[in-house]
Image 1 (cartoon, rainbow, N blue to C red):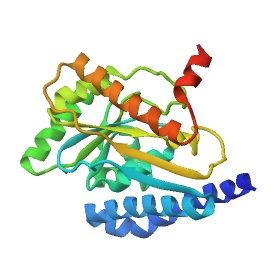
Image 2 (image 1 turned 120 degrees about the vertical axis):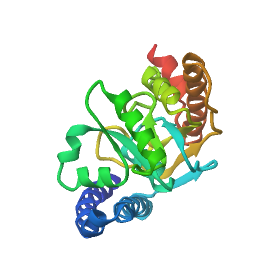
Image 3 (image 1 turned 90 degrees about the horizontal axis):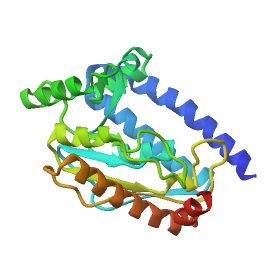
Length: 246
C-alpha cells in the first residue's frame, strides 16, 4: 500500500511542477519575485503533500542563514533540495549553462539568480557574480552547493570536493554547513517514500579566512557527524553500515 501511495505522490509532484511553473510564468518573466514565489510554492506543496499522502513529515532545525552566505549541504535526495531552498530567503545554485535554454526551467533558474557556468569556467562566473552583486546588477543571496558533488547513499564516505573549498575562498563569505537525513525516507533511486520525519539541520557557520584544507576538514567533520546523528535518530546507523561495507 505504501508503494501505491508513493507512486501517486510522485506522479502528482511532477504534474504540479508543470502546473505551478506555467501558472507563475507570466509573473516570473516580469519579476524575479514571481520566479522565487513559484519555486517556494512548489517546495511547500511537495512538503505538504508528502506529509499527508505518504506520511513523510519535514522539519528544519538550527538557525537559517540570511544575507551573503555560502550554504554547503550534504545531498541524499530531491527532498533535501526542496527543504533547503524553501527556507532560504534568497537561495540560488550554480547551474550548467545549457540549462539556460531549457523551457521554463532555464528562465526560472536565471530569474532567481542561479549562476550559469561553462565547463571549467566557474571561477570567472563567480567573479562576475560578485561584481554584479557589488554594483547592483546581480541578486545577492545564499549560494547553495553540495559538498560531495552529488547525491550520496546513506552509508557513503565519499570525499568532500576541493571545489567547495575553492568556492569558500573565492566568495570570502561565511559558510553554513547543512546536515540531513532525508535519504532514509526518500532514497536516491526508486519509487518508495517511507513515513517518518525528514530533517534538515543548519549548523553553526564557519567564518571566512581558513585555509582550504582546514576548511574542508572542518566542513566534512561537522556535516558528517551531524548527519550520522540525524540518520541514527531516524533509525539508520550509518557508522555501522560503513563498517559492514569495508
